[in-house]
Length: 129
Image 1 (cartoon, rainbow, N blue to C red):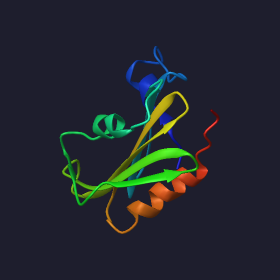
Image 2: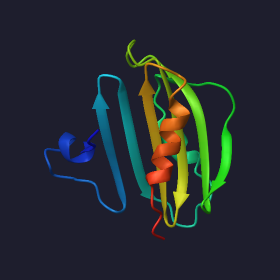
Image 3: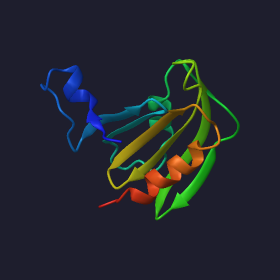
Image 4: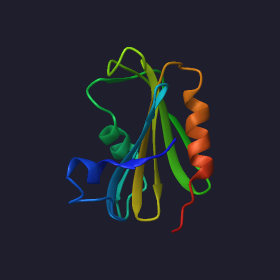
C-alpha cells in the first residue's frame, strides 16, 4: 500500500509534511492506515499522541498495552469505529523517538489482524535519534 501526504492533499500542496509534523494515510478496500508525527522535545510519554490520533468515532477496547521496544516507549490499544461499516475494527498506537512523537491507527474488517499490522509497522520503523 502506498502512503500519501494528507497535509499536502488537503492544502493543495501548500503545506506538505515536514520533519516537525505530518500526517500520512494509506487505503485500500480492506484497510485504512494513518501515521502522524509532531515535535515533542523532552517528552517520554506518548499518551498525548494516542489521544490526538483517535477521533470521536473511535472507541477504545480493552486495556492499554505499554512496552519498551528498541528504547522507545510504545503504547497500543484495540479500537472499534463507526467511521464505516466495512472497517469496524482497528487499533491505535503511539511512541516517542528522539524529539518526535508518532501516532499510528488502522481500521480493518477484522479485529484479529490489527496487532500484527502494528507490529509490522514498528518492525519497519527506524528511529534515527
